[in-house]
Length: 302
Image 1 (cartoon, rainbow, N blue to C red):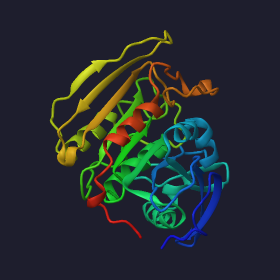
Image 2 (cartoon, rainbow, N blue to C red):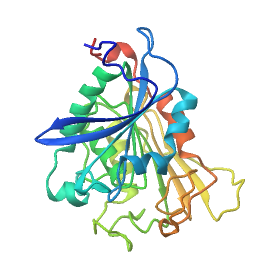
Image 3 (cartoon, helix red, strand yellow):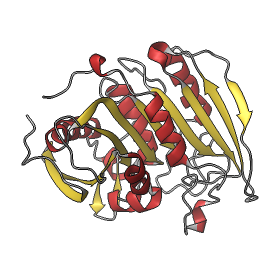
Image 4 (cartoon, helix red, strand yellow):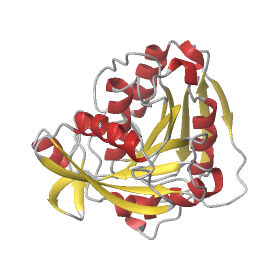
């Protein structure tokens, strides 16, 4: 049961929990607005890529600013690794230390959600996930194995890490991916700059599997978005609608885009181009809001 002493206040908080014999850490960003008995926070889990960590993900994605403007909590879980600065998550066929050690990251996130229900007043049906690269693959794992707890996901620059998906209920998906991603190639396989040497599934494979799992229409509506900035990128959108429980699967393909977070410029030129013609944070939050589950369909820890 939540108590006032447990509720996290406005600001950033480093927290720890012990799971499966490991001390795991996570960074919580709480926007302005003191929680009350009548106020519950939407929650976005944001997973970092392999070889980075939670603090780097906060800076890389720039999600805190969006959280402050829209009023949701962001939690950045840390993966595991041999050094604090280089961590990863075990998500199907990806990646690094966590996969080699067979770390139970699904169990960790389930335990983390239990802990967060003690630390925050979480809005029922409004737990979402996003992630970069290995963190995107982790989103797909959560959707497949914790579908009762995650309502929608927004993977960036990382496909699903398995041949099939087996969600217990539909989960809406909004995927962002560049066509010249040299780390997790759009068409699958091993990226020419890949450090983990993972043989990735393709983005079309991920979309096809989740369209089928959610029962969406097989043929998408398509559009090319306006290109107000001449930065060598063009954004195309495929939208698969009419899934069970009003779910949908959406793919934003960034022609000319690299292994980057759309709308969040990076100084790491080795990652490739970041499009300025799409803001992933804006798009995914609109998507999450549309796909929150009805509160009467979700059990909430009192």
